[in-house]
Image (cartoon, rainbow, N blue to C red; front, side, top):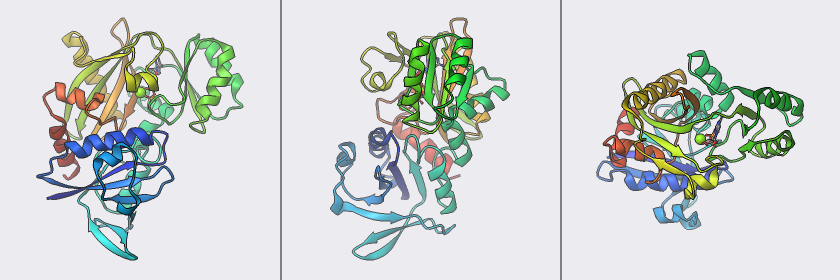
Length: 345
Ligand SMILES: Nc1ncnc2c1ncn2[C@@H]1O[C@H](COP(=O)(O)OP(=O)(O)O)[C@@H](O)[C@H]1O
Ligand SMILES: [Mg+2]
């Protein structure tokens, strides 16, 4: 049996999404091979080994009596966590950590760094790639240096920089996208159509992070590609998001009220292959390992523009990453096996 600690929750605006993803992963892990430990990190940042049911995670109803405080000792090589129970501490062996955290303090390299210090191997991207992919501005800079097309963009480091924002929007033309520099699930993102909306959209972006980016609008549709592996890459099917006006905001992402996700995307073989190739180049450029979902835009002329890499994409059975892998012939259980095998190498 391999002992796998699934980490979820965390101090992030995507806390709730992480709970749902974690349930997806926990339910799909092959229990004949893996002994699953659930590490529940609260919104306040308290760590617990959770011995309650997975259903309680989905409902965010943590039972205090089944929650035991956890510490990661910086004790390289021991591969153990410390659990406090009844006034005593117990050492529990972990073969692999599987962070299923979205956004800040989990997907951004911080947890990955902590696990590295503790000598516990972790599934997925390491510290550098996690941090880079979380930063929408720097990820674009590095991809662009590798010859990948990216939207025109400007970094807004303080809410005072309204002139810089206005200048960029005037030069680029409306609409523009205003985003928190490091967030996810479309939190704090606005599609802005006029100079009057710029300030309030920046305020909204700054309520999620201490910096923001403004990007030109890319005309076309969004396509994603699941990538698994490190040296040798396995690609999922490419998907396509069809929008009914607006953009892929939080509401559309989780209700699909008017937006539609098609997987595999109805693209000709050449375009689908170009999307996969570009996903692979972006994955390598940003030093990704293990797995990630690479999101791009496909323009009307077939040009492919980088949007973002989600180093820990949504993992519910309805999420895009598992669906893309499924369409390529890998069930979620098989995908997790591939990821785990890679991480234990
Ligand atoms: N430059 C852009 N051009 C066109 N649409 C965009 C652009 N940037 C973002 N969007 C839209 O906004 C959504 C959310 O933006 P994204 O950068 O992917 O943020 P998140 O990390 O929150 O998913 C995208 O799925 C897309 O619909
Ligand atoms: Mg996105």
